[in-house]
Amino acid sequence: MPIIRRDGPAGPRDVSLPSGLDVWEIVQVVRNVGNRAAPAARYLAIDVAEVEGAIAHAAAAPGEVDERIERERGIAERALAEPA
Image 1 (tube, rainbow, N blue to C red):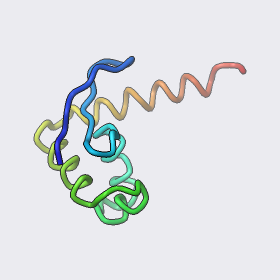
Image 2 (image 1 turned 90 degrees about the vertical axis):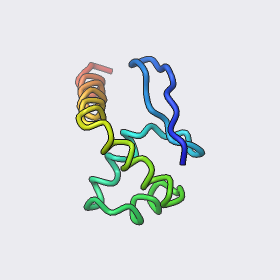
Image 3 (image 1 turned 90 degrees about the horizontal axis):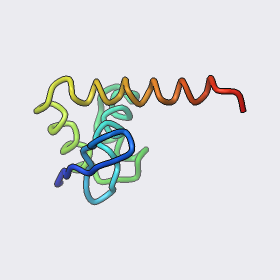
């Protein structure tokens, strides 16, 4: 499945097609389900080939996806810490 780069509010991001999910989002789900593509695909309601493509893309750019996951986690933690 193709991966394209798009600009976003937090900077450029790699997007998996056809779902439009960010690669880091798919990889995070894969990790959360024990590094298995099929359960991640079921959870995300996307084709397993798209999950495998995101995994391969992440493996080709070591560290990039991990950095994005950490950046997104920090954004979420700061947002949760802010008073409503």
